[in-house]
Amino acid sequence: MLTNRINTLSESITIAITTLAQELKAQGKDILSFSAGEPDFGTPQVIKDAAIDAINKDFTKYTAVDGVPALREAIAGKLKRDNGLTYSTNQIMVNNGAKHSLFNLFSATIENGAEVIIPAPYWVTYPELVKYCGGKVVEIETHDCDSFKITPQQLKEAITPKTRMLILTTPSNPTGSIYSKEELIALGKVLEGTDIIVASDEMYEKLTYKGTFTSCAAVSDDMYKRTVTINGLSKSVAMTGWRFGYMAAADTELIKATKKLQSQSTSNINSITQLAAIAGLDGSADADISMMREAFIKRRDEAVKLMNEIDGLSVTKPDGAFYLFVNIKKVSNDSMKFSKELLEKTGVAVVPGVGFGSEGYFRFSFATDIESIRTGIKRIEEFVKTFKPDFGI
Ligand SMILES: Cc1ncc(COP(=O)(O)O)c(C=O)c1O
Image (cartoon, rainbow, N blue to C red; front, side, top):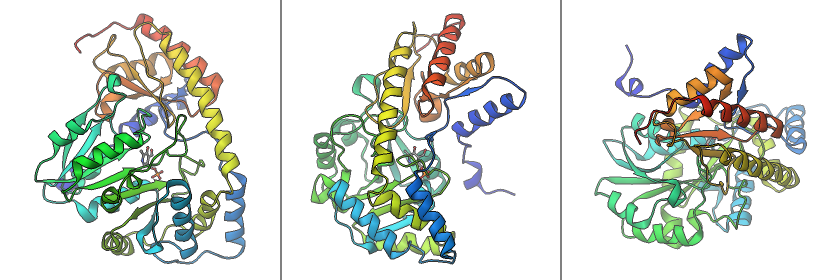
C-alpha cells in the first residue's frame, strides 16, 4: 500500500528519456545523448587529491550533521567573496546535493496547500517536491520573447494570502536566462511587506557567459532576510556524483529545523566529499572552472548557430548554464512525441519541454564534445525535414 503523497510524485522526465536512450544503446543503436544535466569533464585534480588525502587520513567517520566547521567556513568565505553575502557558519547547512537542500527546505516550510510560485519553464524537480510536501504549485508562464523571465507585475498578480514561497533559478535550467541586479531589485520590491520566502537556486552561477552574476540575497536587506540561497558544486566543478550542496539563510531557526530533519534522516553527507568540496570552494579549482566555462561558451555558440539554421526551429542564446531551450512550435505542439520520435529515428536524445512546464520546446544539453554536438544537430535537421507537423500552438 503506497501513500497518496508518493503516488502523486511523477518520475523525472529527464531520467525517463535517459533510460530509453540507454535501452536503445544496449540494443546496439547509435545513440547521441543531449539529455543529461551534467558536465562531461572530470572532477578537477585538486579536488580529487583532497579526497584521496581525506581517505588516507582516515577521515571516514560520522561528522557534524550540518557539515564540518571547516567546510561551512569555506562556504561562508565563498559567499562573501563571490556574492558579497555575509553568513556565519550557523546560517549554513550542508546537504547531499542541492536537490536535497530543496527537499529539506520545502519539508521545513511548506504544508497544507501553501502556495509556491514557480516561473515556467522550471527545473523538473521543483513542482514534484512542492506537491510531495503538501504545497500547491502556482506557475507563472514565461516566453522566449521575455527571455523567459517573470516581470514584477506577473509576480504581483500571482501572490495571494496563501503564498509561502517564490522559487527563482538564476541562471535557469532549462533556459539559461539570468536575472540582472535591477530585475531582482524590482522583484524584491513586490515582496516587501510579505513573509514570502525566496528560494534562490544558484547552481549554475559559475557558468555565466555575460555580465556579472548577482545573488538574490545581495540586492537589499529585505531580500537578504527572506532569501534562502541554494548552491553546490555539481555543475561548476563537475561533481554530480559526489553529492554536495548547501543552503544559506539569515534565519537561523530555519537552518536549525533543516538540521533536525537531516539528523533524523540522512545525517551528515559523505565525510570524504566534505573535505574535497573545500577545494572546490576556496579558489583552488578556479583555473579548472575557467577552462570549462570557455569550452561551454564555444559549444554554446556553435550549437546556437547550427540550431538556428534549421528551418522551423529557433533558439535564443542562453546567458548561462549549458542548455538550449529550443522552440519547435512551428513544427510540433507535442514535445514528448517529437522527442520520442527523434530518439527512435535518429538516436538523438533531448528532453521534451513539457517536462519543464513549457510545451513547444525541447532541452538540448551542450555539456558534451563539439563533434557530437555537430553530428547531433545535423541529425535533428534531417529529422525535422521529414517530421510531419502537428500544428496547434
Ligand atoms: C537548477 C538545478 N538545481 C539543482 C540541481 C541539483 O543539483 P545537485 O546535483 O547538487 O543535487 C540541478 C541539477 O540538475 C539543477 O539543474
